[in-house]
Image (cartoon, rainbow, N blue to C red; front, side, top):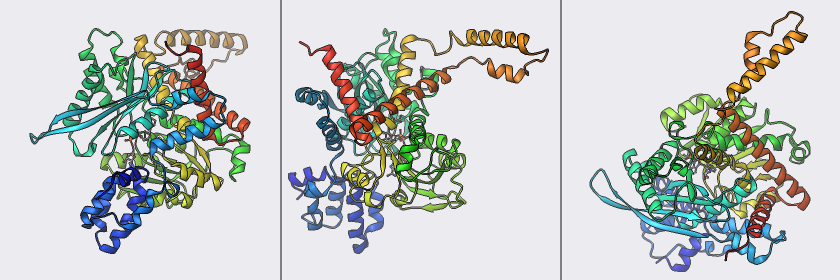
Length: 543
Ligand code: NAD
């Protein structure tokens, strides 16, 4: 039997590490091929019970028992976030009671979504929504679809949202939602039914709305899913004039904003660009200034990983390998992968396997261990853990995913002198542009609509005046005149606001790290804690 103690212990085992051990075990028993299929995206407890069932063992094999000791294993995702918080709290001047108040998850709901499947079977699906902090309203955070999501993971992600918003000064509290399904096993119609019912469950509990809680895309969801959510909310709250602000990451036609799709990847790029512009910092890891010609490995070619890769590629960085769920690629030309080619192949085939003129690798975890300047984990949490951290050869890690490093891995890598750019800052571009989208929805007008022509007119008048005064009869060529007099569109405002936010966020984190002599992660948590404490302190505690 798997005992309660064992089950609790499993919560602290990263499933990828356990999968590695079980895979080795099963190779000896010649059961490995079926396990590889099972291991993807499964929780530690699922893997252990699968192992027990397959190998007909009554008790857990003794070699797994050492995972029961926390000292030799990785913390769960929620414990990791709390651990990082506690480490930063130790060097803050915030009162202990207030620290406990900031850290605690304010509320979480769990409910069941009934789904009548195409085959006629009725299925009950678990849904969660955690609202971590109400110190600012609305609260904000994505909705994730995954076979292993649970209350703890949702609370960890909600807490990260609170801290992230504080680091980049976005005036929201943190939240997160999740639906426990493997999206690849459901049709689009079924997913639509699940998400519409999920929305109804939130609305009827007063857990959603432009002034209450505003979801967004996350792992497994995108603009289409946000459109379903917005449509359902608007149907239920048809008298709410601000209904389109109930969710962000929507298609443009549904009140979305230009620039949201690439926002997280572009934000990550801005942080990397700023890091590489700091000569002292890059010299410490044996690198030179500038993104150009640096080598990058990206894990996860979804929304975040793809756009980050595109901006790096445009800036002259070389993406030398990409790890995807079902296989990855390694460049053999020395010039770096052609991201446009990789992107269209992935879009067309749903996999990277089989792309010609590159080295295809099935054991994608090994890709993370290849030598490179920068590793960008952009898939899921706990991907780098006590089991593989020692083999990571990157000089810099930019956490584009939420929580991709366990604290044990963080410690090992810091000990090796690796610079870690933390998730709280690196992937904050998504929520930043979500904030702009929400503002657009409340204003009922797109950015630039009232100013673009006026700006163009002003610039043309100025150019004509310069031409007349100093042109000596020469005319400014039409194409240059058009270029110089172009007024700002919505995407110009969004990219400019995002750049300002990310660069200021980076400067604050860097300055704090230098003043306190600590890591960028600890500095980011410290900035967040002190800002939230100030906000709560200024408001006072009701009653
Ligand atoms: P996504 O669903 O668009 O893409 C994730 C990609 O990772 C998929 O292509 C998937 O196949 C791949 N993947 C899954 N497991 C993998 C594995 N073990 N190895 C390699 N690849 C694997 O999700 P996303 O929106 O890009 O989110 C990725 C991460 O970034 C998540 O941690 C999410 O919470 C975080 N994040 C996303 C946003 C956003 O705006 N989308 C904002 C902030 C943070």
